[in-house]
Amino acid sequence: MSVQATTILYKGRDQTGETKYGYLAQDDRYGHENGRDLQDTGFYEQIQSVRLFDSSVQDVCQLFFTGDQYDNVYQSWYALKGRGLLNITGNWGPVRSYLLVATSRDGENELRLSYRDLFFQQWISMIDEMKGDSIRRDVDPVLTWEMFPTDPRYRSLDPKLTYLKVHQDLMALVPSPYTDYHVWMEYWIYLYPSGTGVRAHVPQYGWYVDGGALHDNVRDRFVWRVRDGAATLQNKVNEKLAQFDGIAPNGVHDVYYLPGRVLKPPTHTGFTDGNLTTSDITIVATAR
Image (cartoon, rainbow, N blue to C red; front, side, top):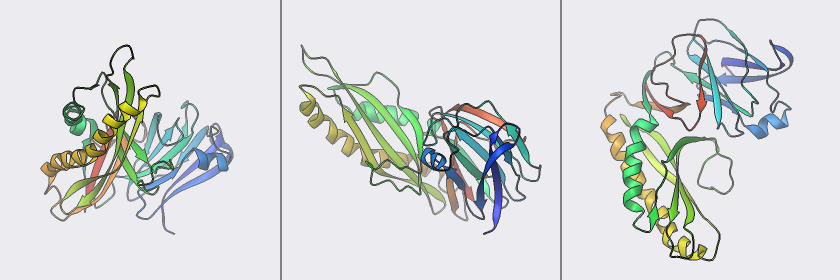
């Protein structure tokens, strides 16, 4: 195996104590361990410092998350190519999962796009149209990602792949004396290279309806909207992506994601960003 990047995770501060290694092999985009992985090796909530080695061919991003599935609060550090290794001792809270990401590779051109900028208003228009008069939207959608999913309820998701995700809370209106029912819908979006552009597939949807006397009635008039919305969402996302057709005359090679709004590659080694994974996701399309 040709190793292109290495991170050493330490249980002690200042690069001391028990260690475990993470790697990026040649052509790997991500290295990753979720909460279960870290529990199995005794490093769950135990990482206190890191040694992140730079690469001669790509920037290396180390991401730590307080959620078990690459979610919740994150912090990111970069070792830029050729700039030397990076020693990190951080106050990042409990690390329950991590990602190692290869970015800005030699020989690749990148187009970076904000998930929120691209799809937020389009989703609002779509959901307000499809919900009908019997469902009320009081809050904005949650736009985030789902990296290497493991939830057994969603069998159409591949644990080896990465997805964008949209979650929408709604209220289903019911007659008095009953109170309105909380419901939600969510969709997973898989982006992939397609010729000189990027296309989307919506492989999975999810839904929820509050329990109660009218649960079945609310479910029956809600779930079909969620089901039919998957095809509508896929079409609308692809319409949006079509405006970028031709961005890579020799073909788009890969699509990957970074948490937050990272529309330009970092220019310095070290800490770059910290936020919630629901703040935004950066979509990166690469071409050679």
